[in-house]
Image (cartoon, rainbow, N blue to C red; front, side):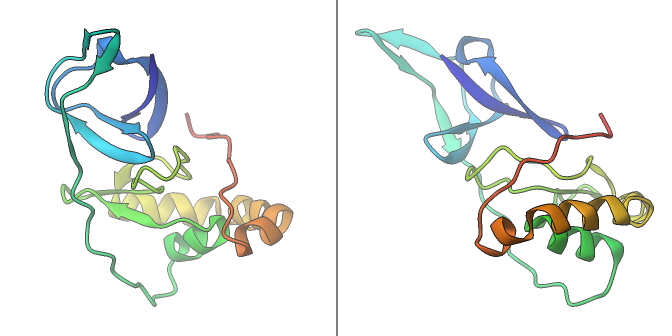
Length: 142
């Protein structure tokens, strides 16, 4: 059984039996933290886990490159609380990531440097983004 595991700044498909405590994965549309190893019982796979507390949503009205990039892709900035942030939806609704995970000042510089790329992405997918659809962006920074 494969699940989408969040690894630093991207999601990877991994076998559920390779997960360890503390890993973060998407299962049934929810982002969860693994609490112990997966096991099989009566032909069913079980994964001890707990839901991830979602951060408080803060509306940012500033005109920064990160804010514009976020608007261009239709996603949000997730602050990890350790000084780093990423443009991604980490609520389990998708496994899409739109920036590397970087210290906040570096994320702003990254977005400023690549703002035209984000704008071109929006120009190409604006209708879907405005309709609330998620659109995959291939991570060129990997």
